[in-house]
Length: 129
Image: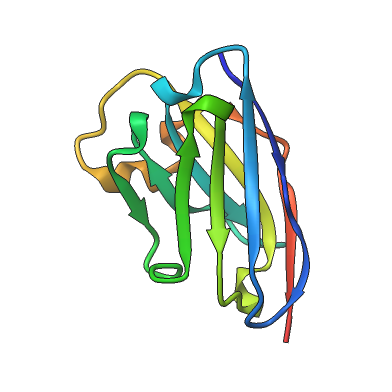
């Protein structure tokens, strides 16, 4: 099972950008389905973006389409989330997640937390207006 560690969170003003990173260890992350999730205080965890092994396909929540980009670097065993034009409603703890086996029926399944069995500890993103 892969071990995940996120970084890159911080406090920014509305309209700003951040790049979140998730470094994997213990296995080759490029074999895994991976995703980014976020959770705001008092709210359920929600899927932000997902990516297939090798990075061939991606999926995004409607709320971040056109602003966030998920990518992976196989050589660095790292997953990224480029977050642009940040809004106060993007505030929350951001987690990366991974699962190796089981092809999703539809790509949107990668936005469901139930699909994953490995999770990082999270990195906080705070966007002020």
